[in-house]
Amino acid sequence: MNTEKVILARSNLQTISIGLSLPIGSITEPSKGINSILLNHMTRSTQDKDEETLAEFLDNKGISLYTSPGRTYSTITTTCPPKNITYAIEILQEIIGSPEFDESTINQLVQRQISQIEGMQSNADSLLGNYTRWKAAFGDDPITNHPTGDSETLQKLTPGDLEGWYQSITKFKPKIAAVGIDINEQKMKNWGLDDLIGQFGNIAIDKIKISGSGIDYNYRDEKSTMKSENSYLSINLNLNTDASMLDTSDLLISLLSGGFSSRMFKEIRGKRNLSYSPYAIVNKYGNVALISSLLDVRPERAEEGIQTTLRLMHDTLTEEIPKPELMRALKVAQRITVFVSDSSSSYTNYILSRITSGQDWEVSKIKTQLDEIAAGNWQQEILSQWQPQNLSFAMTGEFENLHQQWQSIAGGITV
Image 1: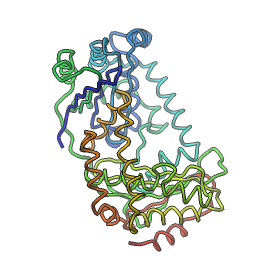
Image 2: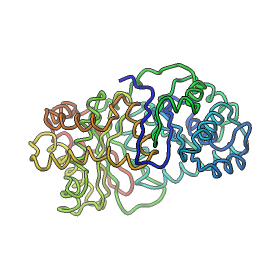
Image 3: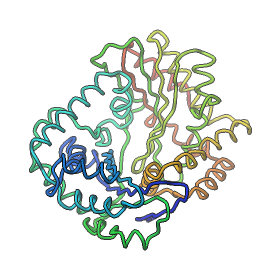
């Protein structure tokens, strides 16, 4: 799929949202954290409007600006009342076309971001989710770089560094999504969307290639600076994948973690009382997807947590799924496309994430694809990648050395 621009009218919405996705992120940035600082700074001041003037303008027009620096792509979005759509596009043109690299504001953002990093690394749950499981799954691959960067590198950033990175990222061709009431491509063109797009270059980046750790049953543990009474576990499966398997992984996540009837909830919380809020997620980047099952447990029950969670993941792929359970999971996987339609901003971001990863974004197509996946050999597709080098374990918080236990457990649960 080569979709570059999606404009979608939704009669039930009261606002219009526009989003731009750029193929840049922490995996490609020249200095850790620079992308996040730049995008945040661009929404705070321009050459024509200082921070106070810009904030007052946005408030008066009911315009919201957001940036989301990611690992492989980053977004800039705006939401506004329909009557102020031309103002919203004009302000996007201004922040993208004439950013102001004010040193004092940059320094404030740097210190705020350093505090954010320290907060994430001091909390065991956050450390696991943002850093540890990525390092376990992908080793030294740049995908492990978190978008917030690191404190030491951020302290050295200069306005010149940011200006150089700005010149680099605006050479790329963005993907565009716009969702709102009573819009179409001609109206968006009349309002200035094409002029906004014209501020970017025409470089299209190739699909980023991401590698796994390459180590059989890889393991990573890290201690957070803040003491925790629990252990936080993540059991991961890397999928070397394409766009078609991304929807397949959504069905697996629904079975494992799709509500109170899901397998992790019933077995880990309901039956064993191992963890209050176990869940599974999938992250989709470049040529890989990372499936992670996460839970917090008492340290003395950590080994049981590993055994139970890994067995649940494996059994879900190797045993026949009862039809009522499969149908419930299918509905959960399809339901997200209904939820996102409640607001223009969530729908815009959803479309951007889909077209950036090369997936279909239309609700009817997604539902049809999931129906076809559920009726097919989807378990075997994922099970084919249940290999030692694709399985990893991560842990933060309070724990004993579980390295050997993990390798023994993972080695004993085979295809």
